[in-house]
Image 1 (cartoon, rainbow, N blue to C red):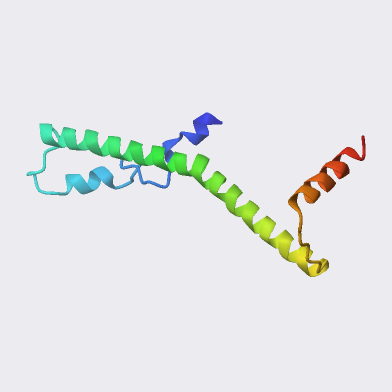
Image 2: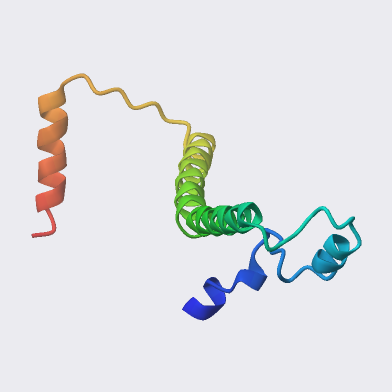
Length: 114
């Protein structure tokens, strides 16, 4: 399972090594661009690291942030919908006049099955 998660071919970010016309485009350019120069190797290393960091961010978003955000939003929607349904089905307004009496009644109700 972890191999399929970390597979770079499944990423939304286009990998230049898997591109079909990546090297052909470079070969068709004038000879002033040389891939053996020191500057281009540093650039390609930096670009590779940049793409790796983007893939790591993509994994972080898809594995951690999106599920927790979905869980939070789903629960908020469920609570809102349930409250709307209960107010529609049972239109009763509950007013608590004494906090101590409310806590005592809750304690008695909780201990009743014992």
